[in-house]
Length: 116
Ligand code: AMP
Image (cartoon, rainbow, N blue to C red; front, side, top):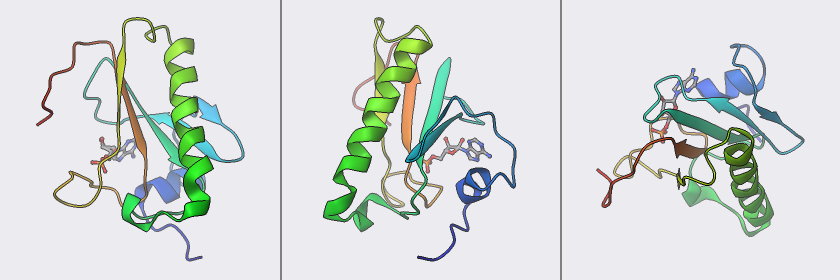
């Protein structure tokens, strides 16, 4: 597998510092540099996957784990009860700007539907 050239690859390798709110064998969680909500975290898998479109069947447990990690962080940070939103953007029309998959965890404000 090629090395992850994205900004998240640099964060995962420690080349760019970013405090980790979660770090296990499968993923890390960091704060979004441009928060769209009072709580805005990103869950990043350690395995390099460019978009959701590239997922393989064997990645299913990893994606489930990322969702589980998000739920634990929402609880730890105290906004689980008030509610939150999980988002994964895919491709340019989906609003993806960093081409290493990541799960957004947004909380601390009322969310609108449909999303922009
Ligand atoms: P997306 O548009 O879904 O690909 O989300 C990428 C997210 O990464 C955006 O919300 C950015 O604000 C965030 N981001 C970009 N660079 C950094 C960084 N160095 N540290 C933390 N978050 C970042």
